[in-house]
Length: 313
Image (cartoon, rainbow, N blue to C red; front, side):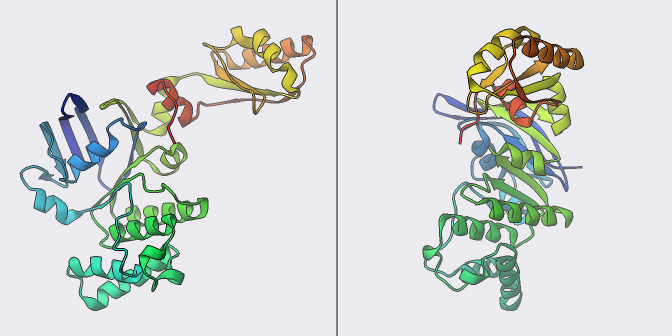
């Protein structure tokens, strides 16, 4: 069963086509990540799914409801945290969360309980009774996310949720996300943090220039790129150029050379033979190896291969 289905969705802003025949299915009770560089169409797609934008053509079904024909029913079952924290600066953190509970008719007592629970889960209890305008950017972001979590929505949309969060806060957010999904929430996550996508997502779609260019599990996406990555570091940075020259023809395509890490890496077909030959050639040239290994492609390498660009911060 799918919680979200889009079929041939198009959206333009003037002459710019932000979405081009986008079709995807998000299974219920799973975490689905949407990856793409800035301007790829991620936020526009989220807005069409959450009734904030009407698609020019195509159909979007969320929780069994058409977002154009039944927007009120869609809003009743979803939660949304956009790219930027949206909190009332004149209210305390506690008051912000209690207000959300009251708006959803939870009652005063239940709203207080939920607010306290999420303040604790997001490590905001120490600042709970301060006005949110005194919060740091990361604290405001956590508060905004708490507001979207508090109703335990059937379907939750998070647009770049960990922007501005430190590693500890990010790990805590991941924990809360997993708990919500275990309780039955479906999560659609947009991110440029490839570690986050690999850590959380059951399935991933990559969008570029308004089009879905790849979709599947992490393993399936890695299989699309194919091959094994051979990676080695030289002990002396002065040897890096020579090492690249004598081993370059062993790779499928041009290997990546990282001067800062003194590292050369790239895909190889016959991995064991390639590794042996690299060691043989470098030894012949008296180039010392700091380390060498074979591994599967990373999600970052998959992303770069499929989009032909670098991930933007």
